[in-house]
View (tube, rainbow, N blue to C red):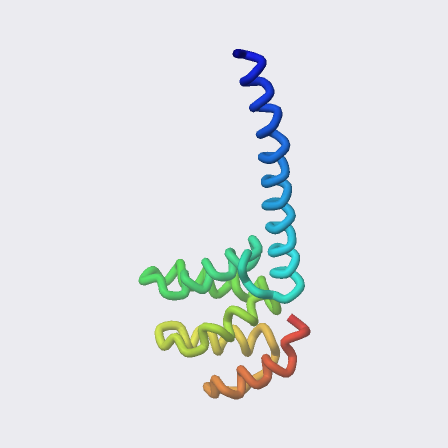
Length: 126
């Protein structure tokens, strides 16, 4: 009886290992595709930190908002793609435009479309 169980376990183990290997390979492929094509499926630690700082721009606490602005300035060019995405958020729009001016050295004023057009032309730099 115990030999029967051992034989069954030996038969299942390679199948489980194969399934795990396939799943691991698929996850590597997805992660690589995400990195190569910038799909945003797996945000990096830096992207998560930038996102958190952008969220903090909405804080009712002025100290938190100021710290978020300083943090985003430090991230520099790395923050530009996410700042472009939130240009239409009326709650933080003036902060976002100010940060884009500071970080990019450009000034398209309050014109969201001009900022987006500029970003599309220079996207590969970020």
